[in-house]
Image (cartoon, rainbow, N blue to C red; front, side):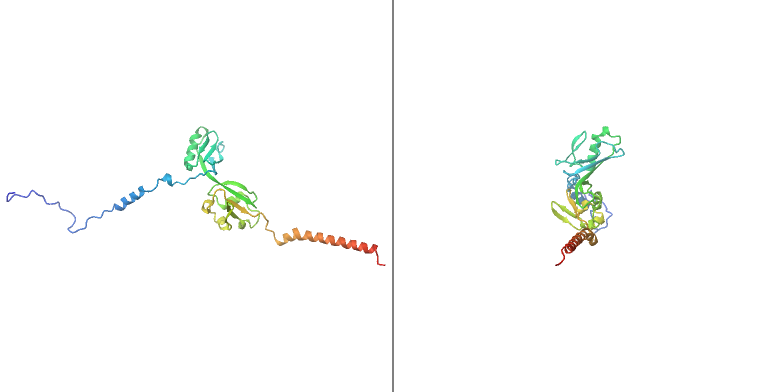
Length: 244
C-alpha cells in the first residue's frame, strides 16, 4: 500500500450499545423448551377414556320428536356392540357420545325429521332388600345415591338410610352411606362400579309397644284362657265329686 493512500479496510459499524454492555438475553429459550415438551405428550386419542363399556347399556333420546322407534335403552353385548333396529349391530365402545350420536344421525337420516339425537351411557345397579321397589336398574353414572334410592321407592324402614350397605362381588365395600346420601355425590365420585349392589335390611324397626301388642298380648290371652278353662273344669269336678 502506498504511503498516504487511505486504507480500504472499513471500520466496523457503530453500535448503539455502549461499550462494555452485556449481550442481549435470548428470552425465547423457555418457549422452545415448552414446545419440545409438548411434542412428547401422548396423542389425545390414546388419552381418551372409553365412555361405553361391554355389559352396560346406552340410552338414546331424540328431540323434539319423542316417538322415534330407536329411542330407549339398548344393551351393549360382551363384544362392545349394540343391536339397534334396522341398522343392526354397531360398535359403540370405541366411540365418544358425540361420535356415536353423529353415527346414528347418519344411519337414521331417512327416518329423522329433526337431526337431534342424544346418547348417554348407563351402568347396572342392584337395589335389594327392604326397598319398596327392589330390583335391577340401569342408571346414569352421574346419578347420586339419593337418585337410585328414589328409583327404588325409598326404604321400608324409617332408619333405612342408616342401614344401607354397599357390596361388590360378595365383598362389603362400605356400610355408613349417610354422608354420601346427603352430599349428593355421583356414583362415579363414590367409586361405584357397574354391577355393584346396595342392600338394606327388610326387617322392620319395631318399638317395644309394637312387639308387646303383636307377640306378648296374644300369648297372655291364650295363657289366661287356658287357665280360666282349667279353673272352671276343676270347680265342676269339685261340685260333682264332693268330699266324703
